[in-house]
Image 1 (cartoon, one colour):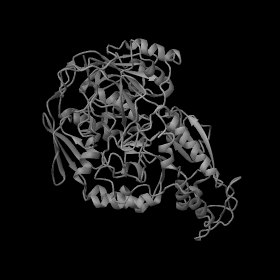
Image 2: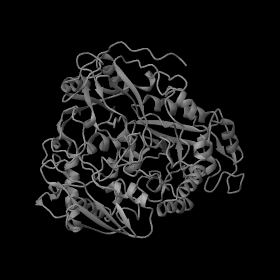
Image 3: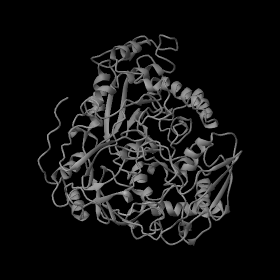
Image 4: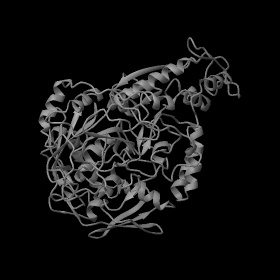
Length: 634
């Protein structure tokens, strides 16, 4: 799973109030955007007309606001484990063993785009057979490349602070649950697996983490190494690749990162953050006969800045961009979108396969921990999160209510029947106030609510909460998303009505992650945060089956708030050991009542605007993009 803010991803496929008035063409806001667009040199036409697919051309694409990729190595440490780095950079060039996202927009295994055939299980052995792909330097993508990844992953997750080195780390899971891995042929890999396990879980959440690595990466500062053979040499290789990955100015001409098995190679990156990719002519995967030749990703400082470029049009239009929610036309009843305010473009909402939430800080050093630890308090705060009003207000009718720890959209077989009934905590400030009053708090709507009856009884404030304790909390949030700021201001106002004071602290997306993961940008002693919101929570990538182990299990790296619950851990374990879907339903129904996080609306990752002359196909809810499937129509 990966963190990300509003991720504006498009994938090539198999195929009330009035709408907001279109703004007048405006000058670009800032030299960065002017330089980026001028450098793009789009080859696309600006108007839609029936015609046949045309090979070649350059497609320009808007990156999420205030965000650019900053880590290229696909074995990413936690602080770089984001969708921006994976979908907008790594997956374009380095393909995972198994690809997810089907033609009908569901987050299931896509055999056609995977590097390997479906794994074969026999008791505690799994055999993987690779297809015939090759690297851009002419070498084959073979069993040695899979063993190389496994050796590296095994090495970096055994050393101290292992979760820092691999963002997908979960204690006692991959690769700890693999007894051995070996090549049993040029294109076959065999693994011995510990204990009992669900085969779907092992495919979707364990094997899905593998990205074969070229032997050209098996090097250190002193030259060639043999991590692909011996795990004892992998730490030195990892340290070298990690350092090279952070050096963004060297990416384009690097002998490491130019070796790709995906459809794209990075051929340009300027000081403003404009990325240029050229089609990899050695790519072995399926692509249509006619496709674009160049793909450019443009950085923007805000949604407003991007929309100014999108709406201005001109000789060099932005081919694929996004409509800010403040400009979104409210869809009429029964429709997915409203009237598009941008002429010559197609509007499509894109929703990620993930979970929209923001975490509490359950760290023992936090002074507000005793309050946060009370389920009744978390219940009260959730009742103040007015998801329906956020969807109809800041999100202009686009979005879905988050109902629990499993994503509710797109609708999958993983969602329990109970969760499928809708919001279990609809907005109810009266009920929230009553919860606090019946648990020993004096509610002060004109000030701060205070604990008057400490203790552990049913009418007391709860374990560890002292007399006179105040309901004051800090909430760090990522800037650049208008809807998010509006939603949090609404929550702050709702909470203030019953004396809960929330101090909103703005930071960049990376700044928020830095605070919650390692305290970067904080004064000595750390940041005394209680809540943090980086955008839309969590994407189920590269773990596509929402069993909860990576996000809510004790000790998991993705468990940012350090939530720990023994019953929860046991229920999660059952979902890993058996493919019985009812076990997943039992777990999510239990955790829905525990509220380890604040659930917020599943906002669209983007309201995608694509120029009519460019075919981009259906969109992938995993947020992977496939521009190799795009083509212009002349």
